Length: 407
Ligand SMILES: [Zn+2]
Ligand SMILES: [Zn+2]
Image 1 (cartoon, rainbow, N blue to C red):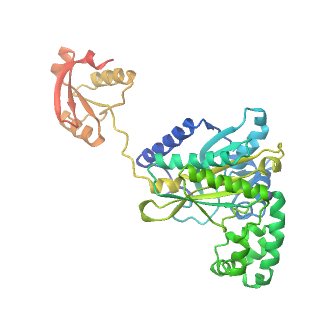
Image 2: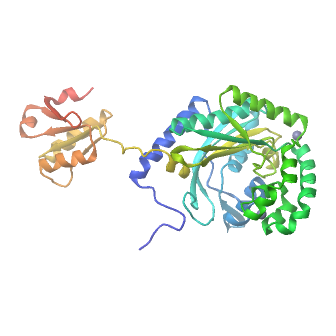
Image 3: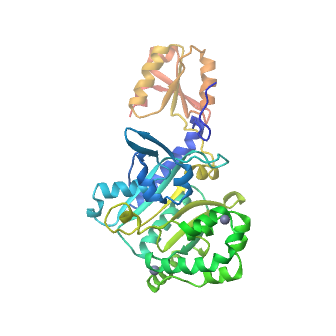
């Protein structure tokens, strides 16, 4: 039997009612703050991700679905920010009124070992704000994420936040950090040793317990605790913390949070939900003032976040399947079809039996489908131009002229 490829799955009608609820809440949130949708291709040139995600990352090195077609190397997008930034540059959005506020929703692809909550085809929803460099714009996107999660019924959120500095002060930070960890290199894993050369900040992301223990050493912690960034970066961060407090979003500074990509500047953050008793990171984001320029565009500040939609689905209450307005039950299929179609033209959702069931079985079927009302069209109703309405929640029944159903 043929099945879906490993790490992918079908979304069946029963799953999709919850997905559609989540998507509707996302659209509602974005509309309220005037973030507008963008849809970029799933397929992009590989070099976009090599430059835009970073060729020292696992995503680019190990996890991308890439192939050659013609004489070009193509990739199924592993994330959506690079594509949005490419579109920003390609369509001259730096000439649009600032800030440019965009959101996206859609499938992403990474070749990883599938496990609970991690699929090879997964979905992300994300927001990006371009053109403004203030702490207020950082607050805007963080508050947007909070508002979306609240609409999903996810309460008990916590915000971990850090300041990773700018291009100027981070170079200095890297040099000092490398000097500090150099004596421990033999204790650190192969990945950390590699990152020491290519991208030392990412060493702090290592999940290896031995490495984690090294980074917890008092000399390294003391270094991280001292803010190593320049005074402009420190002012930006302090202002943001102040704004968050005034907005009643409690933030916890996590010095180990680095999101070690070169284009991140100043603010990086993660939102965790303590819903259902378990801690789950649901959102990651930050300021990435370097990315538009890295991809060949004008120097443009930007800040944004992304959320994994499978993770959100696992946390929100399952929504009931959409209930129908009417089920038309009749011993005469043609009459039922005519009435059903008239009701649909009025904007109602309507279903009926096509398999020739007896009237009693049709009523049982209607009950199973969870319809609001059954419109019964028996012989006497057909003769009199009436219809008997059975309210399935109140369990009441009335006979009315068919005309009265139409607005
Ligand atoms: Zn700085
Ligand atoms: Zn390591």
